[in-house]
Length: 143
Image 1 (cartoon, one colour):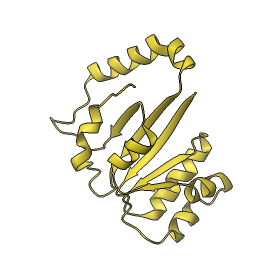
Image 2 (cartoon, rainbow, N blue to C red):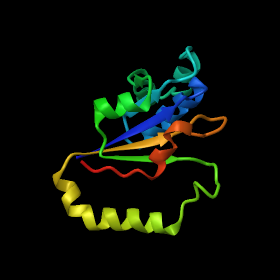
Image 3 (tube, helix red, strand yellow):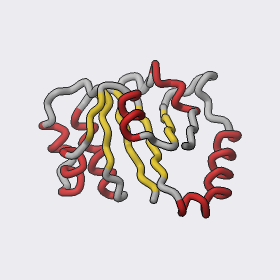
Image 4 (cartoon, helix red, strand yellow):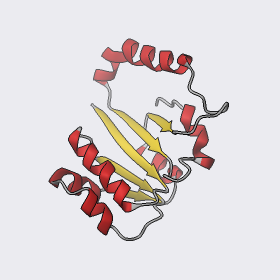
Protein backbone atom coordinates (compact mmCIF):
# COMPACT_ATOMS: atom_id res chain seq x y z
CA UNK A 1 0.00 0.00 0.00
CA UNK A 2 1.27 3.47 -0.85
CA UNK A 3 0.51 6.35 1.54
CA UNK A 4 1.06 9.95 0.45
CA UNK A 5 1.67 12.76 2.92
CA UNK A 6 1.23 16.35 1.74
CA UNK A 7 3.47 18.55 3.90
CA UNK A 8 3.19 22.34 4.08
CA UNK A 9 6.27 23.88 5.70
CA UNK A 10 5.70 27.22 7.46
CA UNK A 11 2.40 27.73 5.64
CA UNK A 12 1.51 31.43 5.91
CA UNK A 13 -2.24 31.47 5.28
CA UNK A 14 -4.78 29.00 6.61
CA UNK A 15 -6.96 29.71 3.56
CA UNK A 16 -4.29 28.30 1.27
CA UNK A 17 -4.02 25.25 3.52
CA UNK A 18 -7.78 24.81 3.29
CA UNK A 19 -7.60 24.96 -0.51
CA UNK A 20 -4.90 22.27 -0.46
CA UNK A 21 -7.13 20.11 1.75
CA UNK A 22 -10.04 20.52 -0.68
CA UNK A 23 -7.89 19.47 -3.67
CA UNK A 24 -6.46 16.54 -1.71
CA UNK A 25 -9.98 15.27 -1.12
CA UNK A 26 -10.71 15.44 -4.85
CA UNK A 27 -7.83 13.00 -5.44
CA UNK A 28 -8.36 10.75 -2.42
CA UNK A 29 -5.31 11.96 -0.49
CA UNK A 30 -6.06 12.36 3.20
CA UNK A 31 -2.79 12.90 5.08
CA UNK A 32 -2.15 16.64 5.43
CA UNK A 33 0.79 17.72 7.60
CA UNK A 34 1.67 21.21 8.81
CA UNK A 35 5.24 21.94 9.83
CA UNK A 36 5.34 25.06 12.03
CA UNK A 37 2.40 26.87 10.36
CA UNK A 38 2.61 30.67 10.64
CA UNK A 39 -1.12 31.15 11.28
CA UNK A 40 -3.20 30.59 14.41
CA UNK A 41 -6.75 31.12 13.17
CA UNK A 42 -8.26 28.16 11.31
CA UNK A 43 -11.41 30.04 10.23
CA UNK A 44 -10.25 30.90 6.70
CA UNK A 45 -8.83 27.40 6.24
CA UNK A 46 -12.12 25.79 7.19
CA UNK A 47 -13.97 28.12 4.85
CA UNK A 48 -11.64 27.39 1.90
CA UNK A 49 -11.80 23.64 2.52
CA UNK A 50 -15.60 23.97 2.29
CA UNK A 51 -16.37 20.53 0.81
CA UNK A 52 -17.11 17.78 3.34
CA UNK A 53 -13.98 15.80 2.41
CA UNK A 54 -11.76 18.91 2.37
CA UNK A 55 -13.03 20.07 5.75
CA UNK A 56 -12.39 16.64 7.28
CA UNK A 57 -8.83 16.57 5.89
CA UNK A 58 -8.13 20.09 7.19
CA UNK A 59 -9.56 19.34 10.64
CA UNK A 60 -7.62 16.05 10.90
CA UNK A 61 -4.26 17.46 9.74
CA UNK A 62 -1.28 16.68 11.94
CA UNK A 63 1.11 19.32 13.23
CA UNK A 64 4.85 19.13 13.85
CA UNK A 65 7.31 21.76 15.04
CA UNK A 66 9.92 20.74 12.48
CA UNK A 67 10.59 18.28 9.68
CA UNK A 68 12.83 16.13 11.88
CA UNK A 69 9.92 15.38 14.22
CA UNK A 70 7.79 14.34 11.25
CA UNK A 71 10.53 12.06 9.89
CA UNK A 72 11.08 10.47 13.31
CA UNK A 73 7.38 9.76 13.86
CA UNK A 74 6.19 8.83 10.34
CA UNK A 75 9.44 7.40 8.90
CA UNK A 76 8.69 8.13 5.23
CA UNK A 77 10.50 6.06 2.63
CA UNK A 78 10.70 8.88 0.10
CA UNK A 79 10.60 12.66 0.59
CA UNK A 80 10.25 14.86 -2.47
CA UNK A 81 10.50 18.64 -2.09
CA UNK A 82 8.92 21.05 -4.55
CA UNK A 83 9.67 24.66 -5.32
CA UNK A 84 8.49 27.14 -7.92
CA UNK A 85 11.80 28.94 -7.70
CA UNK A 86 14.41 28.19 -10.31
CA UNK A 87 18.12 28.63 -9.99
CA UNK A 88 21.33 26.91 -10.83
CA UNK A 89 21.36 25.07 -7.49
CA UNK A 90 17.75 23.94 -7.77
CA UNK A 91 17.25 23.28 -11.44
CA UNK A 92 15.57 19.97 -12.15
CA UNK A 93 17.39 18.18 -14.91
CA UNK A 94 16.02 15.50 -17.15
CA UNK A 95 18.36 13.10 -15.32
CA UNK A 96 16.15 13.39 -12.22
CA UNK A 97 13.00 12.87 -14.26
CA UNK A 98 14.56 9.83 -15.92
CA UNK A 99 15.71 8.52 -12.56
CA UNK A 100 12.24 8.76 -10.99
CA UNK A 101 10.53 7.29 -14.05
CA UNK A 102 12.98 4.39 -14.18
CA UNK A 103 12.76 3.85 -10.43
CA UNK A 104 8.98 3.57 -10.40
CA UNK A 105 8.76 1.54 -13.61
CA UNK A 106 11.45 -0.93 -12.55
CA UNK A 107 10.07 -1.12 -8.99
CA UNK A 108 6.39 -1.42 -9.91
CA UNK A 109 6.03 -5.06 -8.87
CA UNK A 110 8.14 -4.67 -5.72
CA UNK A 111 6.17 -1.58 -4.66
CA UNK A 112 2.95 -3.60 -4.66
CA UNK A 113 4.42 -5.89 -2.02
CA UNK A 114 5.63 -3.27 0.48
CA UNK A 115 4.13 -0.47 2.49
CA UNK A 116 5.50 2.74 1.07
CA UNK A 117 5.22 6.21 2.61
CA UNK A 118 5.87 9.10 0.24
CA UNK A 119 6.04 12.66 1.59
CA UNK A 120 5.51 15.59 -0.79
CA UNK A 121 7.05 18.71 0.75
CA UNK A 122 6.03 22.30 -0.12
CA UNK A 123 7.64 25.50 1.26
CA UNK A 124 5.96 28.71 2.40
CA UNK A 125 3.95 30.79 -0.05
CA UNK A 126 5.94 34.05 -0.06
CA UNK A 127 9.33 32.54 -0.75
CA UNK A 128 8.55 28.88 -1.36
CA UNK A 129 11.98 28.37 0.12
CA UNK A 130 12.48 25.36 2.26
CA UNK A 131 15.70 26.98 3.52
CA UNK A 132 17.21 24.58 6.04
CA UNK A 133 15.26 21.75 4.44
CA UNK A 134 16.50 22.41 0.92
CA UNK A 135 18.57 19.22 1.04
CA UNK A 136 15.33 17.27 1.02
CA UNK A 137 14.63 18.31 -2.55
CA UNK A 138 16.93 15.66 -3.91
CA UNK A 139 16.80 13.20 -1.02
CA UNK A 140 15.57 9.74 -1.78
CA UNK A 141 15.69 7.50 1.23
CA UNK A 142 14.36 3.97 0.99
CA UNK A 143 14.18 1.94 4.19
